[in-house]
Length: 96
Image 1 (cartoon, rainbow, N blue to C red):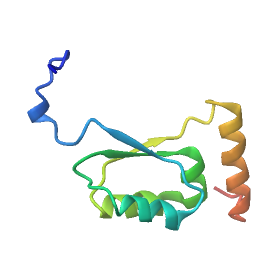
Image 2: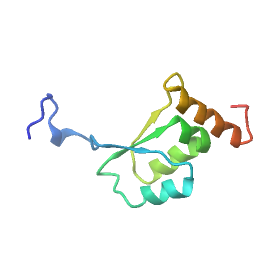
Image 3: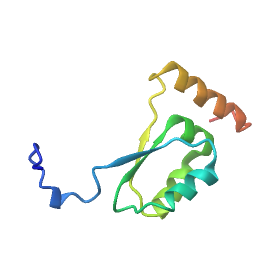
Image 4: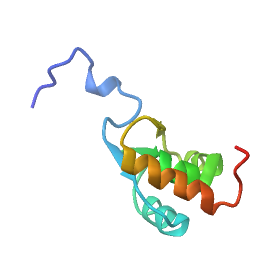
């Protein structure tokens, strides 16, 4: 199938495939990540995971060779925002 855009697919530095990580458990998330190849996809970390695990999660993913897309739109979906706020409360820190 031929691409409809003007980008030569051979020139892409990383995969156009983005896999969303939606885990409440860091161990499960990293176990999944360790089974996939960073050359095959990029990873999306949403506000719930980022709020629970913070910037260290992104550093861990980068260390494994992944490009990471942070999706941190807190104005997005009320239910998702509520879950992220709840996750932040579970960290025991409310100071940022």
